[in-house]
Length: 459
Image 1 (cartoon, rainbow, N blue to C red):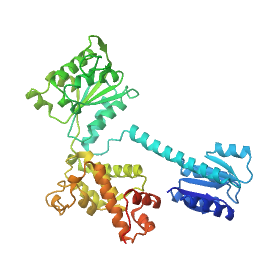
Image 2 (image 1 turned 180 degrees about the horizontal axis):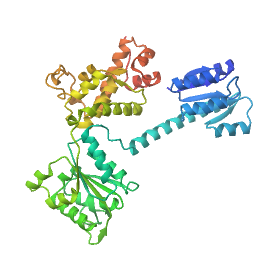
Image 3 (image 1 turned 30 degrees about the horizontal axis):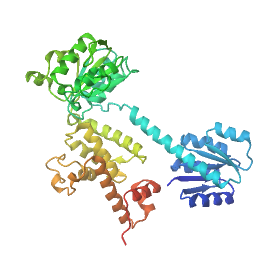
Image 4 (image 1 turned 90 degrees about the vertical axis):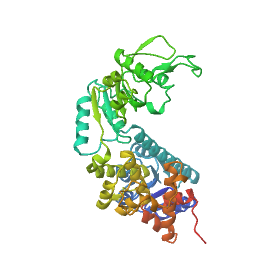
């Protein structure tokens, strides 16, 4: 349910607009002056402002300018009984979405309101998608191991040296590779990522070097390989230890000669690529077992960077957890929750077999299932089964949820969120307003959740 603020010093206009908008099921507030309007804009998340231009003390143009400083994407529809082209142009220049004259035409008003709200939703969605697609997270932590990694990146990134990144799954190897690329002279060019473990061995050569049409049964058209796609930029070979020996031989040749040949082709194609590789395996043992070429290892490991397990740098957990908390709350459009000191200590006591990835999932779970302040009891209640130490009071055997019923984490989140909201509604005798305040979300968002999960009050 969209939330709209009406700002007009004429009570009759405010009452009329409120009646119309509430009939259309919008949530409406109204004030008779600009100063109060700005105070409400600071305190609340409004989706739209309907603002009169001619008012006592502070006129609508000033409210428009100051309001957009507080919430830059907030759409303003300006209303005036003295509408002129000059006034409309001035309002548009100051950032107003539209301008309507008094008395407003009902159909025109509702159409403008709907269009303004749709535009705001599109702007918000676009920003979230861009942020998710483009952001490279900081490498968080002040431990000696992380500081060494940061220093190494600063020294190595501007060079053309190949880098081999080692570390356990989820420890942040990909993030190190991204920063090596971004801080390099190739940072403005493309970073192409290949997960060698996710590609079948019979297809890895086609993926890396491309193929010509008809070179094998399913080759119905020519394909450009990752080496060619990354030319001028960086190629990140993740889980290099899982690459087949035949593909390793071709990668070695490409690194030696800066040339590739597509599968089924004869022409040599020059490529200008900086290769960064990563693995969770001990390549020295893989070499001894005959699974990895020693000459390729030496080609790739000009610089070695080892990313430590999270349990080896537990002093970094509070900083990382707080960063994840702020990031996830922002993505969910909710106020940032506080993680108290006892909860931080409880997080540091966990084993974190899944490293940084597991920590992020844990913080997301706590944000969904906990109240305004995340406590050590929440951490113990919602920790992954088996992740607590043996002395913990909350072991997997005490957790009665059947986790096998969930095929992915989103299903579990929806299940947990539904139960949490239902519990809070019943605790507050289905007082939606009180429940929204209790769990610190907008009432309109709570109504949406109730509808989404089909929650109904018991007779």
